[in-house]
Amino acid sequence: MLLQIHEPGQTPEPHAEDRLAVGVDLGTTHSVVAYAVDQKVHIIEEDGQQLLPSLFAIDPEGSILVGRETNSLLKNQPDAVIRSIKRLMSYENCPLSYRSLFPIEEDPHDPNILKLRAHNKLLTPTEISSYILKRLKDIAEKSLNHSVTQAVITVPAYFNDSQRQATKDAGK
Image 1 (tube, rainbow, N blue to C red):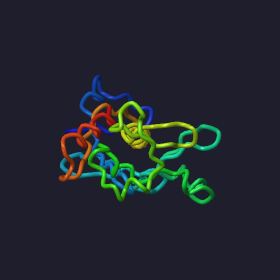
Image 2: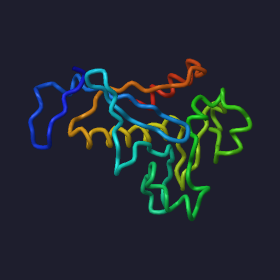
Image 3: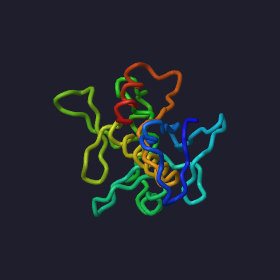
Image 4: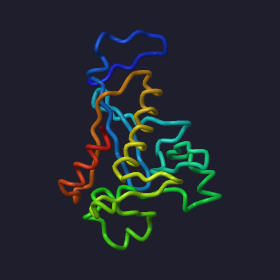
């Protein structure tokens, strides 16, 4: 068995969390987290929703918002919400047509390092993806009542080594 599920308040086996693994589809528009038991996949929901919008923002107060938390900014300040960040994993491979869709600022010391402006903070696509992955981890841990220490994260078949490495770095 890959995963043992425990009722709230029930004590897990010692070191059971070492065997816990979730699957994550870090998507361009939506992401999802799931686990498998007895060769059956179970998608983890948050508030009845299986899909987490792959959206990121920092509100005017400096709070980080991920997924549905960005809804108020999407309505009032849509340009403040970063979407489709997966398209920018590994900047050198990003099509020029996508670059105009993002608040990109290049590092003056290294033009291959790109950062995006979220409110008054500059972040790399890897850092932004890590916030989305962290949110998915939090959703899984809350649902499973168990710590998550291992994950399999999908990447598109067309991703090159640099893009796969950027996704791995986000997962760390």
